Image 1 (cartoon, rainbow, N blue to C red):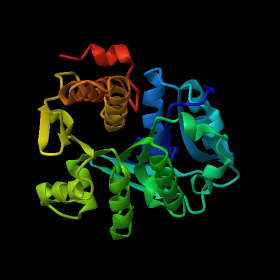
Image 2: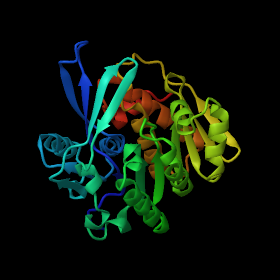
Image 3: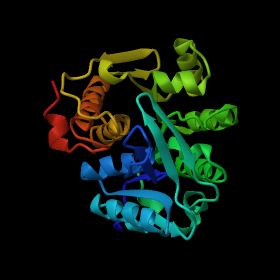
Length: 302
């Protein structure tokens, strides 16, 4: 076996600029991106992992490169371009309000043809989602990559991770990625935003109708999560913890479900869900998007 990753997350790595004072004169810069966070979580669980995406050649890109290296991601999959960085401007934190700056930015230049030759043969699982699938022309490149990997027998997970960019123009991508995916993760907020509806149950039913054979992870924050497969469903409450920060909890959850399904293919769905819910809670025990270790997850298992 070549030293290629068995797990690849493809999408966006970005910089969050988060307001720190009411006058909006102080800002905190943090590395982020939902698909990038999923990759970091999987690497933290000791799975050979890559993040496939593109970042800028400036100081923001430098920070993402360094953080990717520290996370032990395979840097051969991380491309750099002399284009502007993708920035998420969080100008209000409670409730969150944000917008993105990234016209012709580096993330849009990603080219799957430049990834290391032969990597697909060693990839067992690929993850897609986040705002990368709502940004053209990147979205089309990623959907095509997901379709190619699916044909090669790679398992696909998808977390739309709703953001304001995902208006009606995102509908076709939502449906196509759901059709491709083996595992789909959504939250109540995702369903309300993606379907522009208050009828959450109907939205979830519509989503599932597009791919009845997929496994669906429905995360519910402090109320835990449920796993849906065919006519069956399993539900678990969240562990009782002192929450420090919920940023990255959803990313940790889908990564943990993928890890469990990869490493314990014969486990019962409830076992997968236990691990998933524990991981989401473990990610809330530290500030920022902090990927939990296997030990931290196991400590929260019932």
